Length: 128
Image (cartoon, rainbow, N blue to C red):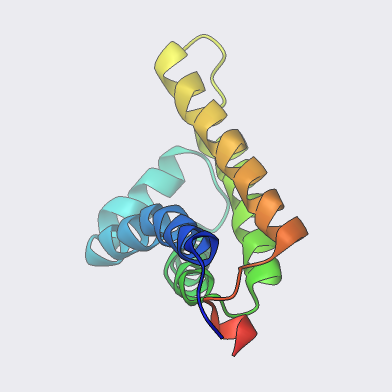
């Protein structure tokens, strides 16, 4: 099986899409008190449980998506996570900077829906 340029582009897309989740998840893991405090400030219920869920999704699901394992499912989870975090943390219509983050999350969710529709490509654990 010979890889094509599009196979490598698909892999690069997964690397770039997963990078923000893995990076931010590790950052949150290194500062649990600050992260839980931020979640509490947002008014989220059970900030400690939200923290654990956040690490599982951002690091765990982010890595699974990166390697292309159960890619359609992980893309769906990450896409939903983008919408949830957009609504919970960034939807402030009177704050243009936060609305940029909101729209960025919505855009990323759209990219994940493309993966749900078309899959991970040949260079993925799903294809092995």
